[in-house]
Image (cartoon, rainbow, N blue to C red; front, side, top):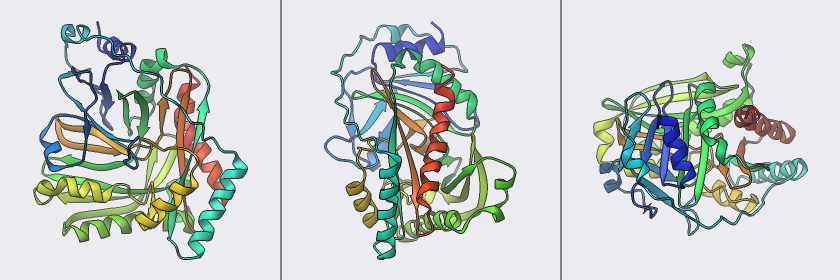
Length: 365
């Protein structure tokens, strides 16, 4: 059995696992939990002493939990591996998940954007991120391994992952780090604003006031969070344009002292998530508004996920450009940040462009 057949074995037998490839690397890591029961967790300090893969939803509740996939078995595509222990694991069976269709039309999406703009005009908040789902009616479970490899090859700058836990199978190629460690430093980013990738959009001066303000609100949120937790920013770089596949975003990088944050990393994660890049600003007011407005359950879309204590201390990414895999369909999740200058029709077009990150690969299968 080779490495990718091992991933296919995990898929076929419904094992609890995560496969991922970090940005700008070639090696793929496979984390497999031997115990069959999913491990629900809360974001706490003790979590960061364990080794495994964390999956956390946009908003925790009775139906959306955080899970930790223990690294009982750990493999790398760049090393020789003996899969004898893996193939001894027994198939796990779960009932099919009940799927509530929350697809909305272009017309309804535009109405939602207008409602957000009205709330902004009434000073309820400055920005809100609205999302929607797009469904591809076809079974792709036998093709997940192939799609995962194609995403890894197509989007080298993204965090590409595939996980299965508690009857939830998701895959994505996200461009947005939430919190990542590097030697004695931690990095986080402010990422917002989306355009198609071309030479003209590489120039920051060609971006609209709407996009610049949207990104500035995310930057402001991160700065406020660090100030509240009394965490010093060692370096701030940006805003600048950053290519992400067929798209380009506005980005600002923050570098923090890991030793200063180490004992409070759980607090920092909980305060950073969800950033205004996926929720809004201020967070409490915008979150409540979009929860009442959206017709679907975001689940793990715009949550965060990634490895803990595997090679690096922490590598968490915001779960964007992602999809849930059901037995007979794919459910793509896409969103757009709405400010006072948003044009509803343009925001719909932006979600369509974002969907192409996955669709351009899926259509090749």
